[in-house]
Image (tube, protein in one colour):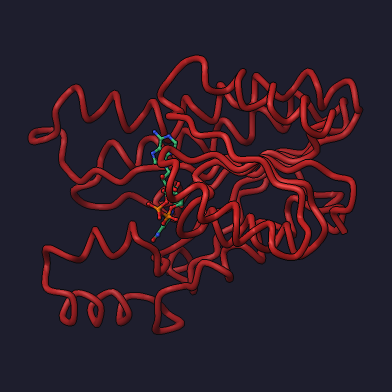
Length: 251
Ligand code: NAD
């Protein structure tokens, strides 16, 4: 369903981002994947290109102000259009207002929120010229609820949810849809890092017990919902925040 469509996925070399890129490739998309690490990026590119997918790798740190323009430029150079933008790159830093530092606060807000803003600003004129486009922001169930010891992260994701709504309203008349996925705990390197220092077994069973469906999500389950929102199948959805969290945020 994505034949002839160009899809940009940030943070696409691991976890949820890679699963999203793989599903888009399966459905015929032309891809521009963004990651910081060249070796990991080349690996992802090789896997994604296997079925004949046309894919471009941009090695960039999204904290870099020039990155968004560079990524958009590469998409236009290679494919001459941008149909889908998936703002997936994100970092989790734990901490309360008291023990977090200003630097951590700024880093988390800059990547999780401002990089999505900059990426959107870079692609919107192209989408407006096409009178079509779909942006999906990967937020978190912690955009919908508070959580302990993760203030900057929760604030960044709640603000990303609000950016989603505001952009949906501002660009609906241009045929551009903007939605967000709110994943719950999902088996990715981010979750592994988050539990590594807390004793894996005990922590995993506590996490599983806190989720109504009794387990964490798989990256492909987050990717399914993301690709749906990106696609024409979701043509009447914009400004939606969609939890994919095993029921966690319904509690
Ligand atoms: P991950 O750490 O496996 O992937 C994050 C990706 O973002 C990586 O590819 C990383 O290289 C990239 N990235 C990080 N900083 C970057 C930077 N400065 N510039 C460019 N790329 C950068 O984690 P994941 O679990 O796949 O997370 C993907 C998204 O899903 C994140 O936004 C995360 O907040 C969100 N999320 C994850 C979970 C979970 O439990 N795993 C839950 C809710 C939301």
